[in-house]
Length: 167
Image (cartoon, rainbow, N blue to C red; front, side, top):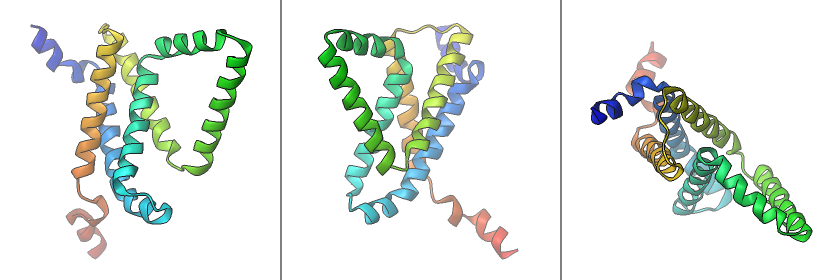
């Protein structure tokens, strides 16, 4: 019975399917953007994918376990005024540099929205998992989608597009 409930989860919580589809589209998009980004900025493909997957993992962890992340962050900030100032300065400078130099922030906002909607849908269905299990499940869904999107061909150079343009 538990296996049937697990297999019916994408039907009962359709935002999980949406999360997978968003990850597929992002994986395909990043596969198409990677050569342009590597040539323009001089970053190797391995470094590009490492940074993208690190950003994705960070988004999944922060959006899946916001209460635990914020609790640890608040404990660090409550340690002293100096630590509060240093942490705020570090966050503001890091986010500012990130927003200025990377134009891929919109992709991560879409992914964060999809992860939050999937969490909301799981709560609506009544699936309550431990935070670590939830992070692993969301990360597997997102990374599987990105991997599938990475191996998909360029949609602009497909058979359907060639026939539409020729007609």
